[in-house]
Amino acid sequence: MPFLTLSEMDEFCRRFAQENPRTSYRVTGYSRLGNPIHLLSIAGMPESALFLGFPHPGEPLMSLVLPSLLEMAKARRQSGARGVWLLVPIWDVDGARWNGEWWTAATSLVDVGFLVSHFFRPGPRWQVEWTFPIHYNTYEFAEPLLETQAVMTIMDRYHPEFLFSVHNALFPEGYILLHDKLASHAPRLSQLIAAHSGTRAYNPIPYVRQWAPSVYGLPHLSRELDFFREHKIPVPIDYGGASFDYSHAQSVVAELPILKWPLNPCMWADRAAQRLPSLWRQFNETLEMAFRMVGLKKSGEVPLLVSNPYYFLERSQSDVALNESRLAKADPLQQGKDYIESLLTMATHLMLLKRQYPHLPPSHQPFLEELLSIAPHFPLADLEETQRCYMDIVQTVLPRRQD
Image (cartoon, helix red, strand yellow):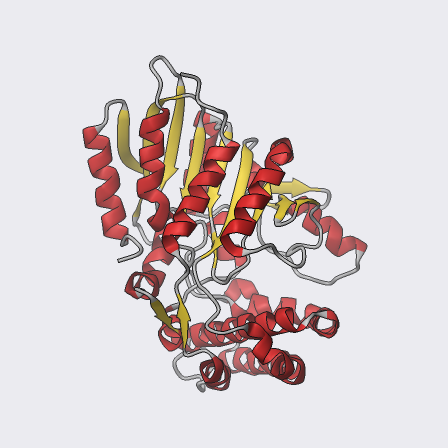
């Protein structure tokens, strides 16, 4: 099985702590549903580093790289060293359980219908990675989730030098978001991404600087707020900062893909140009109708641990013109990629809404059928190569071990 299950991850960490000195595996907090959040701490390290697995519920990269991270920790230990590695293997433990069926079932292919039916990702206000307290100009957020509070406690106690929030992308073309103090590593990191998944054709976040191809600055919430204000974009924000906003650590966010394109996306460029703008409008209209039917007026009314497609409605309404403009300028390859990614976004979020409110009509079905007509399965990426790439990124960023 390519990915460890959540129980296998737990057992792996428990056994590692039993077999290695100056290592502990303990409960550091509890989720909103009462599930324990564990912390694996490894003393005797040359630096202090915090690794956060499952920062978003549908991103299982930690379940792939955990064994290699622990092997690296053993190799980097030094007599008399006072640093500590801190691993939260499963941060969003509730959300990871909701997603576990699709990624643990994957062998060489991911069934698209199964993925859409079992994918879970809530709106930003209910994500553990996006509810850190922040106060910037007139904007303030001070309602961290329980899971976020657990990690805040770790940061406040240990003050790690390095922070690795272990993300992954679904589709090819990985990229890295990097703290300013680590910018000197950008050329090497860019080479790693190019060798692994090819360089990105465009900056995925418009308000961050580019250090090198596929390597960008961190998307601090303060920069996002400035960007929206400067461009007069009426996007409602009701969430907090990210882990790299709260921590003073040198942070690395590596978005490595775990899926491959089933065919060359250029094949769908014409269909994208013809269909995608109208599909986004149809998606918006469908969400508006669904929320009227269930009587929801704002994102905060969505129940705990239930996806929040209303956020996507609010945001996509302000982005319709931007999406259409970008599509008109995109090359055929990017058009095809946007088409597949957009269909998956629409289908999964409408399915999530249907799962929460079963009496709603199956509005996800047209989007899913269109997606299945071009891609009934997504092949898994070369996960051994993905694992090697992530470990090379960590090795590049951390100081060289002094023997």
